Image (cartoon, rainbow, N blue to C red):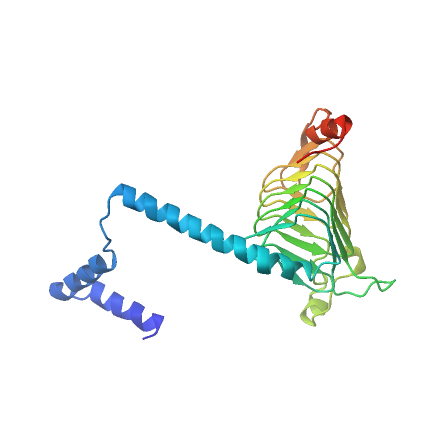
Length: 257
């Protein structure tokens, strides 16, 4: 029985003029919503068992499958790459270099622009050290995207260095790609933090230490140590220039595990 016919049958039961048939609908609904009564401590035990088993399976899969498989797509990878939740999706011609101590969601998409460049080079994604790329983020690389050291990208971010289609409707209908002026580099300098669902346009550089508020659309470059918000994003504040924990540790003689 298809989903359409099931829906039609449910509607027929629910609105039938005969009250006995309508009652049958509610009886079946009660059966569907039945649950097993268990003590609270049993529910807690089952939940923790589920979390433990899921964690073990996820850890084993990450160690033996996700991480080695993803490294096979990378041009260069540093130490201690941590993938969580699966294997990132990569499409198009794209050179990816990943630094050390990075954490990348398995629900991330990386894509490279297929438009041929003047020098014949591939689009390049450069990820520095200690970078976080959050859940369901998309990075579309036109020519070059750089995520410098200590960059944080929250879930749902969209960095688009290319659009995929020309502005002209006729050419778009013919399946042509971007015009050259639609393709641009995106540079996130050291210590930049993008909030949830931030969009960054091609041709934008976000200066060192800047923070972009959730839901913002960044269409122009941002100076260092700025707080920006809105659509389009505007400077709404600044961040005092102070030494970071990493700077202090490096000054003392380097980071230690």
